[in-house]
Length: 517
Figure: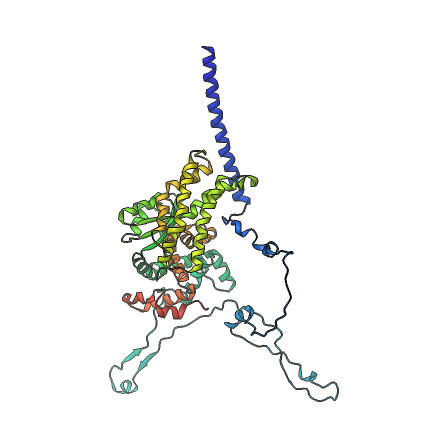
């Protein structure tokens, strides 16, 4: 009886000890991962075996036992290529500063005669920066009258010249270029309004940041919203898109605390879309109803991460294509918490290796510039067998590791998302990752680090609209400042029926706003 009791207690202690050991290993993993995130390299790039000798290729391939044979000297002439420095200066206006001797020094040291200029030599070229120039522009309306009618008619006619409408009625200083300049500073360069206020003060232009904020809300709500809506309609006609979301703090939201997280959703077109678009959508929550509402009427492929909120879209005919880069990231995290000497032969490294094979194959296809049909055929023969082998391997490994560990989480993540991960092989136009959308959302995330929050819902909505216009302009090769200036000069002076002429891919817009090449 006593022995049975002791055996039961020993068994309980053994089980408890095993649980504590697993828990201790989990905490140690979290510690190692936190240390790596804080002090280690953030890149997920890995070097493939064939790349290890990349920088000592000559040493690896040379063989002193192989005779070099007789040396034959060949001489030839060739036209020297234009250097990068010459290309750099080719698009810049050039001003020459000719340095001459004072007249009293133009004396020949031998005979005392007058020296004359007999040659010039360019010693160096420099880039001169002219700071922003600010000037006042007065719009003067001309009034016309008839001299004969002034003498003979009881009421002589008065005709006035037309004057373009202002971008912000009632504002004495908000010109299209000024508002475009402020938007470019904040939404392209990430410069908060309070810093812009300080810089303008140094230029003797005194504009309060609150005034600038009101300007941005006005132009977003009255002008840019129309372009945004046209882009939204065009976007839903695409058949391949990307989606992602990130957090945003809004101080004043009805029915919500300042500490509650809001979300900025972002959607962008596929890389092969005829018209490139990036659209932001501000919402209070991360609920799946938001992408469902934004993409109402869209049917096709949507690249996303594994967030379950996107699953509702499958009910309206959308095929979700999940991201292999997220799979690799999970295994990469499991790899980084291991000691360096344990990484090479680890299970995590095998998982990373499978993902790298897929991305290396895709890189090769891009270099070969394959058509969509050719890419589909090659993926069927080369990539799909690797993906299937990966999932078979993951299933065999899953029962051998602790589910709560980083490696266990990586395996579970991959196996749970298998059907949607395999969807990337359905069409040759589809990507293996959602990195395209993550790159699109990065400017917002960088800007958020500077201005940190939006004060009110209206400001957050305006930011979503402005970011959409700016990022779509960049995606179409436009200079954001020039495009915004064009919009603010044009939209107040044309009927709404013609607003579609102001979309980024319109030939007239490209002519005015294209990035110089």
